[in-house]
Length: 136
Image (spheres, rainbow, N blue to C red):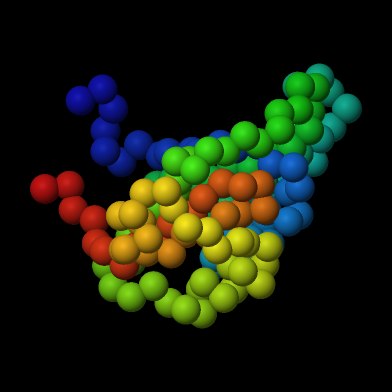
């Protein structure tokens, strides 16, 4: 194996509006702000927001601006899937919608059958899946 299973994972995405994205991921989904930085005057800096669970081995990094700003270009298959291993809480779906999310139908019938798909303010898709995950 090229790296250990406990290796920390960062999923980085550009954002048009970090405040809107932050509301979706923190107030909507319930993630914690792990780090935040504003763009400085030095070349190569940008606005940055990292969210996740403090004890998890992954986090989501959202970036905006800088010397070479990138506009988000998500597709219908750019998914972040959370496996609930049980019913998807309607309260969570409602909070996501109240905080800038849009409920969408997936082109993949699997996700429509087993979960709820919500686009974040940048158009990236979050799937809340009622199935559990097993790598066996």
